[in-house]
Structures are given as C-alpha cells and as structure tokens.
Image 1 (tube, rainbow, N blue to C red):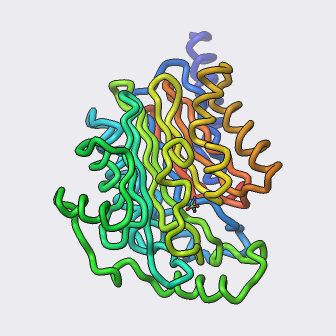
Image 2: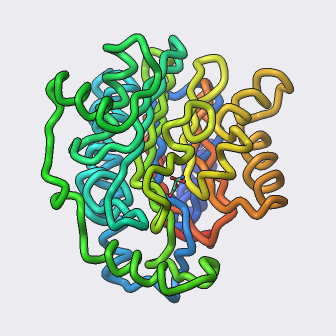
Length: 341
Ligand code: ASP
C-alpha cells in the first residue's frame, strides 16, 4: 500500500514538472527509441522580436504554423511517407500570404516574384529543385516532380514552369502571389541603405521548410521561398541548391535552411550538417551548433535551420533574433515558437 502511494506521488510530481511545452521552450526530449514519426517545420528566420510584432500578427503566424504541422502530422500518423507529409505541410505555408513562399512571396528589385524550391528523399538521395518560378501555385510540388519524373535535379525559369504545367500542376496569374505587405517591404528596403536597420516586417527572410522522419524510417526535406526582398531579378538563392538549403540522407539527417542565402551556398550548410555527422561522428545538435552558431556567426551570415536525424532527434538552431518554427512527434510532444526566449 505504501509502495502504491509512493508511486502515485512520484507520478504526480513528474506530471507537475513536465507541463506541455511552453511556447518558446522548444527543446524536444532526446528519444531513447526511434519515434514512429517526427515532423519539424520553419516559416523563416529573421529579425522578429516580441516588441516589434503585434499580438494579431503573432497569433496569425502561430496559427499558420500549427495548421501546417497538423496537415503533415495527419499523414504521418496514418503511416504515410515523410515525402507526402512535408509536401502537404509546405502547401499550407505556400498558400498562406503570411509566409515568404508561394502566395505572399517577397518582391525582386524589379517588383516581380521569382520563387525557388527543392525536395530531397533521404532513402534514395534523389533530389529535385526549381528556380525562378513565376506562376506555379505550389513550387515545392514542381521540385518534387523534377525529382520523381525527370532525369535532372534542377530546372529553372520558363523550362521549369513548362515542365510543371505539362505534369499537371496548378497555374495562377502572377497577381495571385502579390500582397501589399511585400510591396511595402520592397519600397522600404529600396529607401534604406542599411539592411541591418530593417525591422521584422521589413526583414528579407521568411522562407518555409519541412523535414520529417516517417514510420518506415525514411527521412525527407523540402524548402520553398520567394527569396530575399529586393534581390536582383534572376538571382538564385540557396533554397534550390541541393546541399546548401536542403539535404536529406537516411544515414544521417534531413535539413531545411532559412537565412541569407549567399552564406548558405558558400558554406554548403545543409550538407555540412550531414557530413559532420557522417564523417566526424557529431550529433545533430553538435553539427547544427558548429555551422549555425559558430561558422555562420563568424561570417555574419544570418539565419537558421531545422533538422531531424535518423533516430528522431530534432535541432532548430538559429543565429537571428527569431525563427518561425514548430515540431510534432508521435509521442505527443509538440510546440510552435517564434522568438529566441
Ligand atoms: N534563404 C532564402 C534565400 O536566400 C531566404 C530565406 O531563407 O528567407 O533565398
């Protein structure tokens, strides 16, 4: 009887010490056995801070992230693949005008929208990407099609558009992608010389990405973006460059990046995380720390990434003020966050 009482008190104490993840406490527990599934998402890194974001905006961003997580989770919980889950997740974020991907993408210096996306299958190392997309509603699906249906890894411009259309993807008028908020951001960016002085609303970043581990032990990663506000038209960022903005390998991890793309290309960030695990035996957290918090910081390359490894460990390092992010695991652990603290 006494033992029973002690056990009861221990359970009560444990429960009271482990409330559901608070919104900015995003340290996921390291799993002892591989979870059935894990999904991690981001909605871009940038200069978001509590004092600069309105309560309304904050609520909308959190709701958008949650909706995206729910869409992917439904697929993974039903035994679906990591690839189907990340594609469905990113569709939600591409359709939302809040995030810099699909509808709501940022504008080039010519006032146009040019979107990039990529997709990678960790089981086969097969990968696909598109650059400079202007009319495809879901660029992430165009990237997946390049991966599955073509012998190539990357298609750009009109060739990418034509390929997506020929494979049945939905086309939208260019006006569908434009929002007033992004026009205001472009005008402000053009009138400022120092990008460092931009506040979160004027921030150049906001890419979306998702990585997942499914029931079958397969990892996948995808990223989709409008790029950077006021980028020179024709500029291609890190997102469609496999190994820079996106990487997945069942032997190591799946990674999706967000931040100042030129730095992510020069440092081949997504593949570096995988390589540090594969060749140096670093943990996912150590690899993320090494690249995002040391290497990129030393170069003033702002941004972050989300990643999940083959055992279901999660890492979400970022060196910017904030990063829209969220995760869900099959054991019920979940969270959505924006700021550092
Ligand atoms: N990495 C993206 C780019 O440079 C921007 C972002 O993540 O927000 O195109």
